[in-house]
Image (cartoon, rainbow, N blue to C red; front, side, top):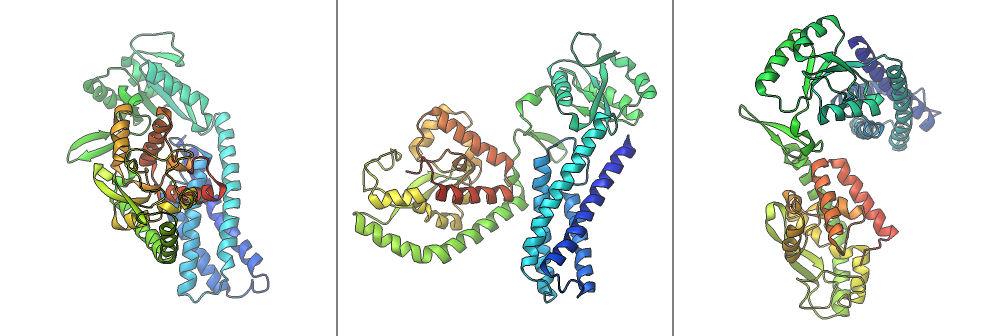
Length: 461
């Protein structure tokens, strides 16, 4: 069993490195057919760097490991894309410091070909592995200890997902039942004998109400046989695959949700990007756009150019959120959000809101650290008080900085909140973003935001 696992991991590694090398040579010929044979030593040196970079980045992303716990072709392609970006940046850096012998077009041709070749290669390997597992190879033979909902869910998961490569030999329990968990193998006292005489790779404990003493006793028996053991806790259904174990000193704790932005390196990446992006927008766009819009807004109606309103930020701290004024000055601005056909909106304001130009002053909020480019949209104070009563986990979205745009907005939940379902879905998307943040997810949301502006949105009013 273990030999098959190592061989498949080795196949993944060799296949990936072959794609990197083959695509490098092919791209070189496509871009420079006349100069293909020139600078061979330098090109070979660059190829060696590419192979080393891919090996280390792929290893850190678990691209060469056997995908059983978190399967999925789309996830693998996403990780591959990150590696391709790193390769592209490596070529740019190496070429710059070595007085580039490669044209700029090579980077685009190479990375484009890489994604096509990698997608093909990984699809073929995944289908091959699935074929092997259906034939009975590369399987992890497991036994289940216990019965009940957790054991049944595990059995259903394994049965419905053959690509996971698990084979349930049967189950042990003190009471034999009619549950469809496979073959009944006996009571708990028979485990040691069974493990000595059968090929088993893992033992899954799914016993309701099992005590620490019982777990330690079973672990001692399984460890003696040199077999891995996993425990499905009774309370796993409460976590929806989002729990995270953390160690405080010598005390283990379980967080009820994953928060990638609580990690220092992720905070640094997000804040660095926020500063860089907001500075670029403020310097290259807002420096001239602000003056033009200020003149138009002042000419269109009386009142200040900027509208500021207190909003709730991270950890429920209030800040002044800035916008270009898109309404006539009115007494309801802090109590009533804009609706379709709202008479308070000025003619220029309709254009500003339709194109999201009214949000541009918030790049200053981002630079000051009150907001982020991407995050849950901040609501008015009166809305926060109202929605807290409707949705129990509403304030969870305040665990991170609010954003100019967000995951909820690019999924259709921007603008007016017409009913309770709208705000529930918006909060659901915001919490999903909090639990699944990544730098590339932010890039995706920014791209979708720009795309939606050009495409037009129904609730952009």
